[in-house]
Image (cartoon, rainbow, N blue to C red; front, side, top):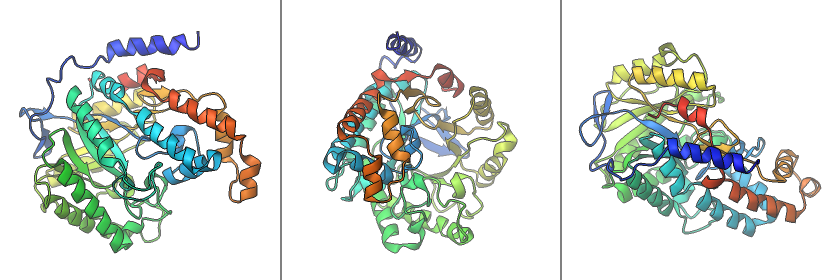
Length: 411
């Protein structure tokens, strides 16, 4: 009965979230900007409504049920300690193959979304060690596949560099070394701009791409020199925009505020490009216009669109009311995240057998080899748990979260 119930729930949600019968809404030209609004290819006003494919190309610990190993690099170290680097590499390839598939994109479209935000790690476009590859990374191949699925199901795609060279945030979300070294490193800035130029050249004529989000949540508030770091944000944005425009004159470029995409005071020049907009984030707070007053005021001052790239992890009632507030003020949204362990997402997956032993190892001290040996479960148990996780994350084995989906107001 335990296995039958999720299948029945999935069947019911698939009826409610039925994918479009044909890609009639496939974009034929680019989304454009008209004052504080976006305009769809058919000339009608366009309000972003969708979700984030978090944890797929930028793993985060809590979406696996981990706390201490909470960045992509830490999670990779954990898996290498469990089963060795070769099996860890095989795990990551299978994870990328299974976590997001066409079934997931069809489901998102069928639930009424019009946009997906795709977080990615810069290393997917280098020869650095990342998610099982040390050369010939598969960033373009993975995103190209999502582009084709989005085209098929009539969705737009925002490309979000969630992890920038050197680290733009200084916390787990950018897989950094605990400081936003990007802003103090010329080589990191050169690589940042070069990767964006390569991405822009690849997608310059691709209308499924709504835009490029240069970096996620720059400059955490923890550092003594936050004002000095904030002063470097807009100049780096301008530099990256200039690099993109050498290859791509077509796409919108999205600029996030400092301190969790919430502080827009560092910006003073919004006339340097005619296809830029801004993006904010908000978790918690009162779901009224006053909660986003600073975002609304900045939007109105610049005369450019504002979009809520991340929000969520709250009650259904809070999420519903926040959507009403944003819609009333012309601010689109993509909720975070689409998929994770358990709930608070569009589809949740259930931890497999013995995953609690993997979690216990994750939370145990592992600072010395003796600690690793003492805490590690036997390798066969670890192998089986990891293999079972790869099955659990497949769309067919996930459970759609009915009330959550209703609360994020995609229709």
